[in-house]
Amino acid sequence: MSQRYYEDVKIDDDIPPVEKMPTEDLAVDFFGRDNPTNPAFADAEAGRRMGVGGALVPGLLKLSWITQFVGDWAGPQGHVANVRAAYRRPDIANRALTLAGRVVDKRQENGKNIVELEVVTLAEGEPSVRSNVQVELPSRG
Image 1 (cartoon, rainbow, N blue to C red):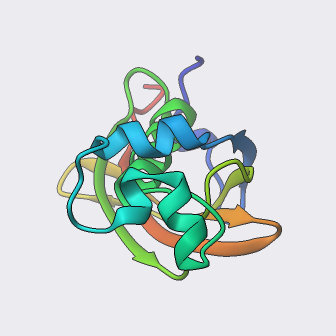
Image 2 (cartoon, one colour):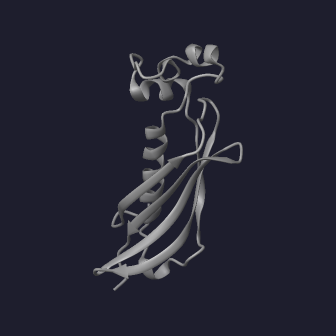
Image 3 (cartoon, rainbow, N blue to C red):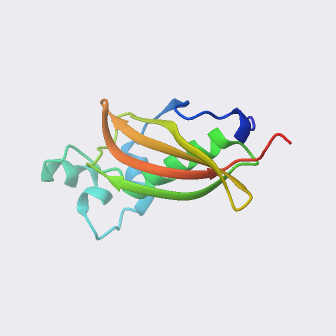
């Protein structure tokens, strides 16, 4: 992973997309097979019986992927400072998710180099999670 510097980032820069595959085992094991909140989080067959098509992908799993995606983009000296996410629709396991993003703002604030990103998870081209992420990046200086 290479380091990204504040001076090299421009508003409207795209973050190269990354594809993730939330398998049924990964989706179910994320919360555990004893999860009482929703049977579709704990059992793919329960999800199919409920009509959602299989195991639901936990929102916290998608949020962790968003954070990892941004952290990898920022590099080892970057710092994910804030993440806000809005869940738009559920995702079903065994369907690829694409993480994509772009730079929407950059500024210096209280001596810190802040870059604001919009990041989405896309399933079959449709957003399922929209997030705004603030990242602190080092200067080249």
